[in-house]
Each structure stands twice: as structure tokens, then as C-alpha cells.
Image 1: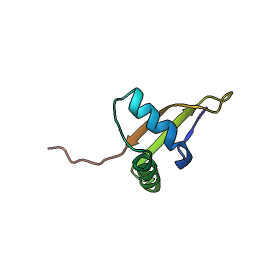
Image 2: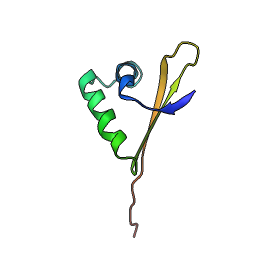
Image 3: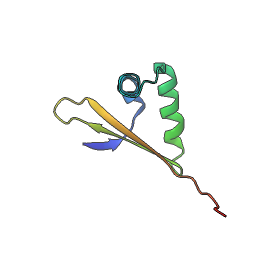
Image 4: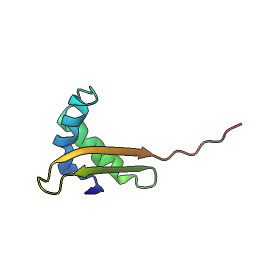
Length: 71
């Protein structure tokens, strides 16, 4: 199931960042970033893939919308 991220997903996201992506971020930092970015719905979209049977978050995607003027 794909759904919007929640701050309660922070531990799973921290684990994914550490193991799969090599980012050693603290749980507190990940939680604060989820909270901060989730409030900016005009520019940030963060979704997780959650296994419906186990409830475990297995992946996530973060999209940032940015308007640029190209010359």
C-alpha cells in the first residue's frame, strides 16, 4: 500500500536511509525533517510503501516541486 508519510514512520525511514542509502541520520533528525517537509504541501510530497500484511514500511519517495526560469 502506498500512503503519505507520518512522523511515526521515522524509525523505518531512518533504517532505510542508513542501510540502503548510506545516510547515517539520527532518529530525531529524520523525525524533524518529516514533520517540517510534511507541512510544506505545496512543494514537498513524501509517500511510503507499507506492506499491508506486516505493516512494515519498506520504501519511500520524496518529491520536491521547484519552479525554475530557464534561459
